[in-house]
Amino acid sequence: MRGVLLASLALGLSWAASSPAAAPTLVGKEAPDFVLKSLDGANLRLSEFRGQVVLVNFWARWAGDTRQEMPALNRIHTTYERAGLVVLGVSIDEDLERAREFAVSMKVSYPLMFDSGSDIGRDYLLQKMPMTILVDRSGVVRYSHVGYKRGDDRLFLDQIRELLRE
Image (cartoon, rainbow, N blue to C red; front, side):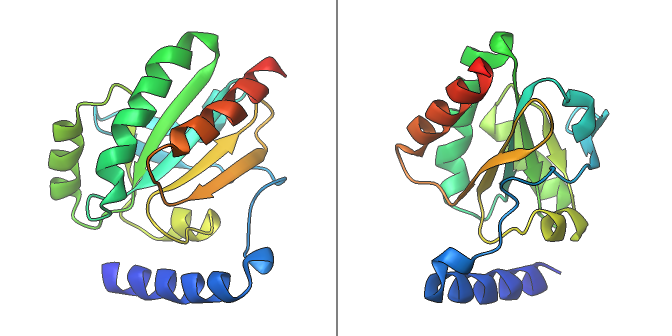
């Protein structure tokens, strides 16, 4: 399954690189709903957070940028949770036990969920790990960011602040 996902990601990246303006996106569309089991065992549904700004981060333990991004997202979560921001991490790892071990080692305080299937990845047009989606209070995707490099969290903060003010 991971091989299929990686092949799909590679195809999507080569297509996106040759035609960035035509890359598929969910921006401006309603965020596809999902229900996933979290690290603490609870089932979480995206639509339960309607009325709040939601940052959904798709990650995988094998994606090197994830180790840098998770602490940055944890700081954002801690700072803006009281203002109405929800941060949700969604692992797409096939090996759930190794994903859980990785998640525990990262010591983040926002909910982490696990999706070993491919439906959510397909619904969210995942291109590369990590990928971050920002959903407004009405459930519409307003921002999508593929990959992570140092400083990207400042881009997230600009968008988050704007959506929290709406």
